[in-house]
Amino acid sequence: MKRGAVSWAFGKFSVPCLLLGLVFFAASLTPSLIPRGPLEQGILGGLVTALGYLIGQIIALLWKAADMPRLKGRLARVLVLCLGIGVVAFFLWILSSSLEWQNELRQKMGMEPAEALHLSSIMIAAAVTFAIAYFSGRLVATLFRLVRAWFYRVMPPRRANVLGVIAVVMILFVATRDGLLDVIVTALDESYEAAQALFDDAPPRPDDPRMTGSAASLIDWEAIGEPGRNFITTGPDSAAISAFTGRPALDPIRVYVGRANGETAKERAELALAELKRLGAFEREVLIIASPTGTGWMDPGAHDPVEYMHNGDIATVSAQYSYLQSPLALILETQTGLEQATALQDAVHGYWKTLPENERPRLYVHGLSLGAWSSMYATNIFRFMDDPIDGAFWAGPPFPSAFWNYIQNRRNPGSPFVSPSIGEGRIVRYASHTQDGSKAPDAWGNMRIVFLQYSSDPIVFYDPASLWRAPPWMNDPPAEDMSEHLLFMPVVTQFQLALDMALSFGSPPGHGHAYYAQDYIGPWVQVTDPANWTAEDTKRLKAHCNIGFQFGCRNDLKED
Image (cartoon, rainbow, N blue to C red):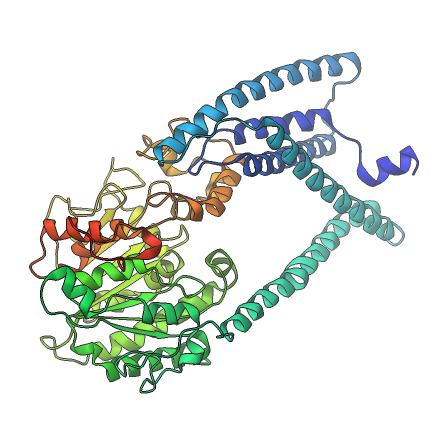
């Protein structure tokens, strides 16, 4: 291919635009909420370098379109050289400090420090990522030129330019959103449904007729799916609870309806209500309506402890709405989750309201992550005003949650964004890995709401507006597990936080999006107010649940 053809296809490479990209790369080396390894840092660096290059190209295009003066010749080359020296010096200074900053953050999260910067890994990953992004962009530009050339044959140049841009945007939209993306999503969803139908390694259905999925149950065991089966069969029984409390206990009631158990959200909700009635759940002391994560998973660290607190005199109900992982479900099946949570709360709360106040259980709602979002959405004004629920406990609420945002924006002046105070603490309180929601200026009122959120959780504190302004929490003094070297950079901070979200699920327990049993216990005590519960009981239960968030409280009883 001749030089002119290459230039026509891929455009002329711009050194000034690359320098802007390197400034973005340098900014990406500063810490954010989650520590990054060399591969992740390299991919992030290459991506933001490409974005910086693209922004530079757009600025140059607008400058040219406005017919602004441009430097040429030797003066332009000298200026680019001086800028290049400054940018490289800035890049090397940031690079030399990045390992120290990352290790400082790792230490705050109880992680082993990285021994080396792994500069070669970072630079190779960045170069490959930049090359892929750059040539992808040039291919789009080539497509535009081809489309525009065709329009030139039938219309004036200015009109051809505008219609060429519109045509390319539509082509890319159809190819991604209505083409490739839909095929991928459909394949993912069908693959999860197929996986749900494979029960070769599944345990047999429960023999106890008092359990969901048994022969006496209204819910088909084969259609519940693995997340629901695990939730039903692996919680503490009366013997385990009695061993901990030292007094006779009940077997907790757990009701779970899988997505395949009903065609619609309403059908699944009505089936759950019927099973609750069959098992006598409305005769228990406490009833919890829980919303699962995207795959239908129910965190044992959230549910096991509260069953110990209430000596088994408790029932929990949940309904699955998706087979996708939470990040995919958040983007692709948002409405499905909201509809299922609303249908379940409508059914259970609607029946609960018909019962005499002195004979019905105390009613609470709960959710983790995407489950917190859907649970909050379902807990509308009627749940708060019309024969209200007794309380709510939401952990790791995702940043788009409307109710969470409403509360956050009404925090007391001067209270930190990551752990705010709301009024006198009579209705809403916050908990984290350092506080359990027990401290407030005033005593609890009739309804108790607690948000559990870690200060380093990007699922909670990602801010779409960080594309152009610093997130609110970045203007506060850093929390205990946050870096003191946070730096806001338009565009770059946005992508740092987006990568943080992807990495947050693998954080050490108590940080990122890794919520675990010990941090659920204090808030559950505050929300449900167990009878005759003491601070010593809380301490003993935390010791009992010391394996970690993914194991709940099913380990053998430990000696204090």
